[in-house]
Picture 1: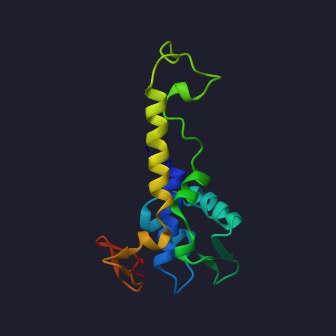
Picture 2: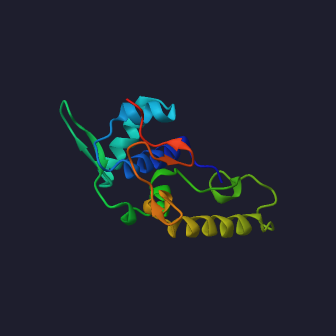
Length: 154
């Protein structure tokens, strides 16, 4: 299973905001840090705002921040909301399936079980879990998550 770029950007944005709770972040900051398109990130942030996970503050000194606590944001729910489908093979879609093996093949069943296990694992993880190292939440102000700066140097 591979996440779409949209889901990847969504998760990166949430992690950034969770690690930088003391200040408002900008889309520009997040886009530059991750080397992603500001336009794509704007779509992600819009959807996160619509979902109630992120609050946007308008104005000259505006930006974004988490609206919910990191422990309340379930990664399984985020992935389900951002992925377009979980059809792992052609045979998952009855309308477009042309596989000659589909009537007797067990691959669909195996892949379906694997997808359920994948999502069940993600259901057991919150955003707070993603920002912890050794049981402690990462700190802002120059701290690092896996050796990568969390806060962009200004």
